[in-house]
Image 1 (cartoon, one colour):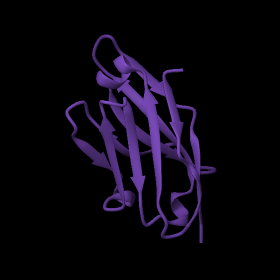
Image 2: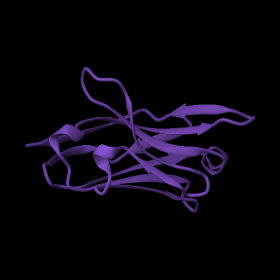
Image 3: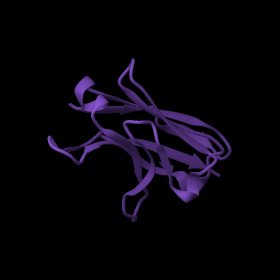
Image 4: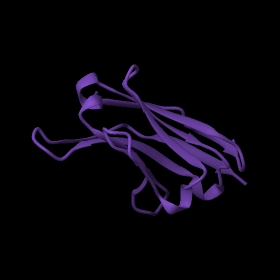
Length: 117
């Protein structure tokens, strides 16, 4: 297993959750890392990403509410989610991607986030 995600759960609207994803050391240090989500009946979409250099990108729907970070001491990428809304409900997947040789595109197993109204 290259990526192991955790931290999902059930929370009321307005609440917070923190997702974490542990990657093997080499994968972590040489990858751009991201969180995607997939709601029922919808396609998987990018939520937030962070480059090896620490540059971040966010979906418009989560800007100002979610924060992605990477911790090289723990080989972990985290997603701090605040002010959660019912539309944030879905299965969240971590991703590690490298587009130059050696290339890879790894996915975690997914963790369920449910936000009740």
